[in-house]
Image (cartoon, rainbow, N blue to C red; front, side, top):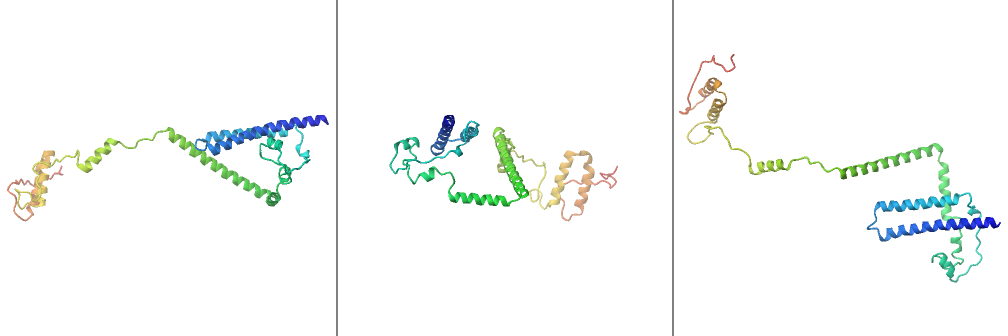
Length: 268
């Protein structure tokens, strides 16, 4: 009997130590959330969760240890109930329970949940029992698929954000070319005002009555003389033939040079 009592006391001490560590970690994490939320980072939150998870796993190992007695078989009976303030109880509970009266005993010594919670739990159990094994397996697979897709999207977004932060944005234009193009369109910078020498447009002084056809023919004559002298005579004959059928006076400054039709430019 004494051995069992010593083993129970040792198990309670180990359990109280683990619970105290867990309580301190929870208090520290809650303090960070309430007072340091502006400086709190996500890695720090993950570290706090990892610490709490490790302490919970250690507590479960203590409870499942072979030397730990089954606490569910132990019965707690209140020996004294008093509405007066108990300083020892205040110190042991860190000020959470000032008195041990009829009001607080049902809440602190309860071994079953509240009747409302117990009714909801029974209802959930009944609803779960109505679902067949096949339907439950399909729902599980559907939920796993949704979670997998969500995790894949999150991982993809994280990879893209990391790669985007590491890789600089590639420039797709040349600022010098853009500025030159804008200056050319807006101010005409870099554009030449070259025109063929001797060309005259319609309505210019010195050639009264010259129509657009004559002006165009004269300009064409000058260009062909500069670019291809070997084809000057056939081209002039064609121009003069076009001018012969035009009504009106011919300008005195244009020379005629009519050759035979046998000298066609495309004749070989």
